[in-house]
Image 1 (cartoon, rainbow, N blue to C red):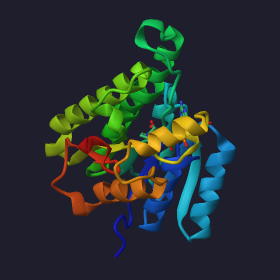
Image 2 (image 1 turned 120 degrees about the horizontal axis):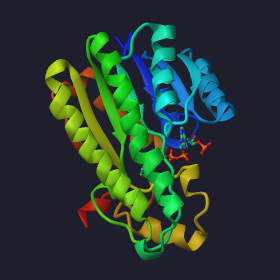
Image 3 (image 1 turned 90 degrees about the vertical axis):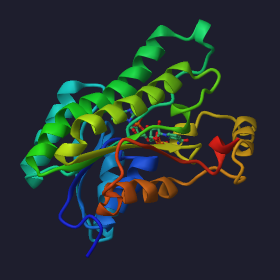
Length: 249
Ligand code: NAP
């Protein structure tokens, strides 16, 4: 039997990078996957990749910074598959880079809206649906920058720290009711999120990882898949780095 047989999963930001890898991993293990993103074209490509492996997925557009979109995403999931068991709140943006004393206020608001409020809005509507579905699992995509700082990224660092706190709260409130919640903390992973960084910065970042390279999206997806599965049945309220040794320093 597959790890997620008969489960229904939502993945936000599933049109690219880590989210796409998670959606494909979920579908490979038997889940019916709601592939959600703001960008229809890239999400459709994820749906096609899932279908090419014989998996089941469908696209629902959702801007995670909108509470209404998050509510509609859950209703669309229930409408299509009749239940919700797993949600990977993955959508996120890097945001502007500047020291706190010069950080653009609009950039702060945007990063917090997508990376932190987005996951809250998701959980706000996912949790009632999971309770009605007999329980579930929430995975919030944090970052190594949810437990350490990174100069010139105050909004991202604050949002990811907040996301780990939110994850703990969900676990305290709902673990006894059948919903596990955990956060995952990737180090730097080769995805379009890093597309604006120059070669020198990329090389410097590689050097920050004791393993000597950045991660691949599928290396994050493996951890997310395992935490989402019954194999992780006693694991809730925690934060799991997947970081090539970054946080060991
Ligand atoms: P990515 O390749 O840029 O993928 C993120 C996806 O989310 C994109 O499809 C993006 O769409 C979508 N998205 C952006 N804003 C959204 C919104 N408001 N509502 C819905 N979807 C939205 O980035 P990634 O590297 O896979 O990042 C995924 C998650 O991992 C993020 O939470 C990120 O913070 C986290 N993470 C990444 C790294 C890394 O080094 N890559 C490290 C640690 C944590 P568009 O392409 O249209 O913007």
